[in-house]
Amino acid sequence: MCHTTTGMPPSSDDMSPDKAPTAVTNVEDLLFLPPLNFSMVDHGVFRSGFPDTPNFPFLETLGIRSIIYLCPEPYPEANMQFLHANKIRLFQFGIEGSKEPYVNIPDDTIRSALEVLLDVRNRPLLIHCKRGKHRTGCLVGCLRKLQNWCLASIFEEYQRFAAEKARVSDQRFIEVFDASSVMQTPCSVSFPREIRDFSR
Image (cartoon, rainbow, N blue to C red; front, side, top):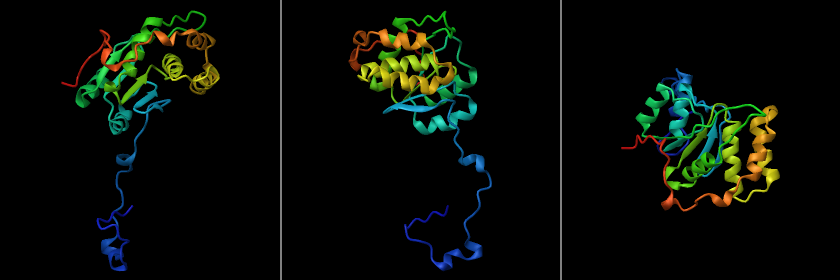
């Protein structure tokens, strides 16, 4: 695409062969690859599966300030370097990725993650687990309860990301979660021990 500084269409003189626009030689420079299951949740809040190295340029365009990571495994070194280089804070809430019927989602962990999520000082932020389906879906579903979504809409959103792997236990957890127990005053939010701050 031709870019002009004046905002006026190019004249016929400008379109002579020696002034033709230069072709892009490296198409990859213009491509941004979002992580698996990437989507916007709310203003300044995004969700996805685990971001890998090819996704880093895309995440840079979002101006991410914080990441909520919902897996117990250590963050890979390449990801840690990306966070450090971009002064992104990591909030890790280690929820085991069990399969039904042995799913145990800790109520207090989701509550702590929600407090980080609700604090506008942490935004823009990205929520992710491994695939961006179950653990991420539970956290987003509980956020929707705080936003007074009806259960039918919450479950529809959860199922859209989980697809054929949707879990009844996850939806049951969202349904019985007590949203009124979550602190919603940003100034009073206490950060979890798992925080790593690269913003200084």
